Length: 180
Image (cartoon, rainbow, N blue to C red; front, side, top):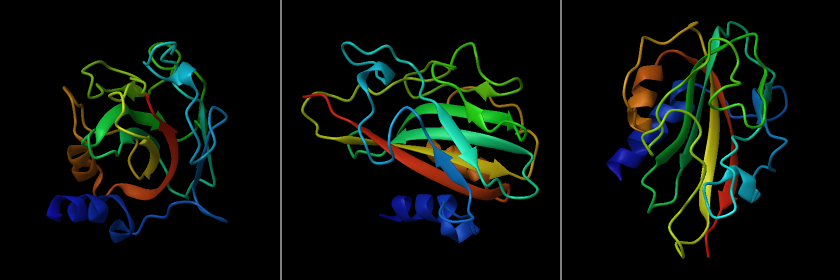
């Protein structure tokens, strides 16, 4: 419970960030509806193409110098599995196209390793019969143009510690997926 509370404190209101709404930083996707199912083409499941989803953001807070995007499976069995971690997205960028991961990312953006151990998007492939998994996509607006050079795989907790004091605002949307 202490770990969960620490993650909440690092990732949310305790740092003075907002999460969307009228006049606030907003994250959307043409690939899926917030709270809706991710289509199979975005997954690593049978029949999936492992395409990264399209994401757009608006109402960027003043002073933003870069963005970070992180997608985490919050299902208890997944133990906060990172599916996508992108850092150093320039402040001039307001969207990422569908299937951009691995070769068509905005100039300057860096894709770090996901929990699968590969850089870039690693689409959902939850264990069979574990129920609906929730994939939370979060964008962080930062007051710095770039993070220090990063190597290896970061956990969500490590990322949040690295971002502490640099986040102006954050916004999230959630997609779901289940393998029956």
